[in-house]
Image 1 (cartoon, rainbow, N blue to C red):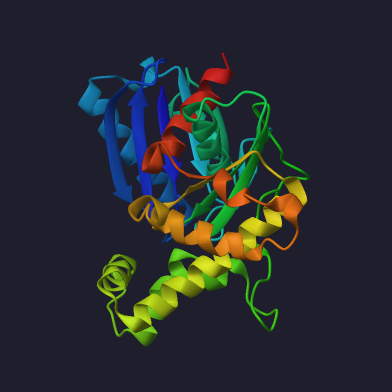
Image 2 (tube, rainbow, N blue to C red):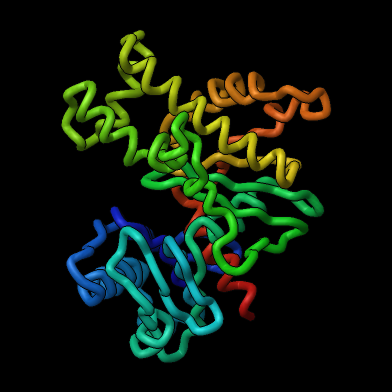
Length: 295
């Protein structure tokens, strides 16, 4: 089966078997000039892995694609993606033209990744929250293996307000995009690899870097505390590039979360935090799970 994790920065694709063994992988930068350039880039990424594995398009039986934003899984439409040029884009029907023998499933990328993490953490009856801290910040909730979708946009924790003046969202305060802007404006770093340089400076004891990272972990803790207050999940898994590349952030976030507990009934909630097991491949495995479910 073919899987893809589509984002505003890159497209990760893979060819897997039913057991989750990866035969070939390819990551290409996203091309966001137009809806068509983005679609053609997705096809190109698919073609790379097919060529590497020696598989023809008509041999592909299942395709799973995760993408950011609002997705209509029944109609196969990419409704709205903030970092992509797709608006009401008929992704499934377009892919069907290129892969006429394949069954195709699309879903929100965080939902896809959450399915992968659910399986990786070997959960059964628990309520799990998967929170991704990357270009943006979002979440997915799964209970007993079923995604809680609400009216279609459940989990947009990044849109909640955490700023002191209630004018800044969690995403605006603590996402990878936000950290990059702070690195450029306050540390005079180049935007490329700015977050990695920030974390290096934090470890080295740079006072300004420590201020920025500490504020970020405090804001993330506030967002997680909201989740605990509303849903009280058995486990919260943290993923996304910011955490995947710096897993030691988990301990800092736990420390800040513990400070927010004012009622003894919430004592110890920080112990329920985990880091992603699948990391950057969570979306690919989640897409494979979704494709498998279509059989």
